[in-house]
Image (tube, rainbow, N blue to C red; front, side, top):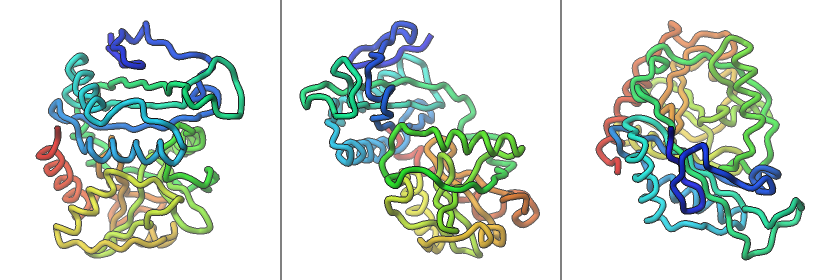
Length: 285
């Protein structure tokens, strides 16, 4: 049985409780982060903690835990649950003052903070990375502040299910003719030695893995071009991929039924995944 963290306490998962009036449950009024664990250590913790603070600030929600304490809780959950490879899910909501109302609760209402682990043996050696993902495109109808990592994930979840029903692995979302991002990842195409991905804005999540991967790519003398691209352009690309905290660098080999290259991961993306995993293991905490 897992040990989880709820509002300052470590508890068996069966004893963890949150109010039915919590605004995360009633209003999706909350933010989250997912941090990967490799070799029992946290991958890019600093980046996730920094983005968490930004998300909270954008929603005018107070942060109930210091960065130092947050790190301590992450490490303790890894230890208590014996996680070698896996994930830590963190969620902070605006809490509850004991009833439901569209208006925010009083300023002295304590936020709710929840953390739990997920054991994922073989996370780094995911067979999907060797075979590559097949994706479909769907219309992006989410709200306009996707740069805030909120818990309102219904449409991305629906997108995953659309892909599953189509016999594919995931979906890329399209707005005004251009790809925004995947359902739970940032999206990229590759032309020659050039990586093309949408620039940061309110339209996409400011991915922590995205930032690291683009940094490593530039250090490896790869070109990076941040601009919009279409599904049609993606179909003509040499390679394509996604990045996320749990998928790392994931090759994409098919888009809306069109195979990229010979339909297998190309040369650049597997190398980029290898560089990312090597570098992040070195800096893990």
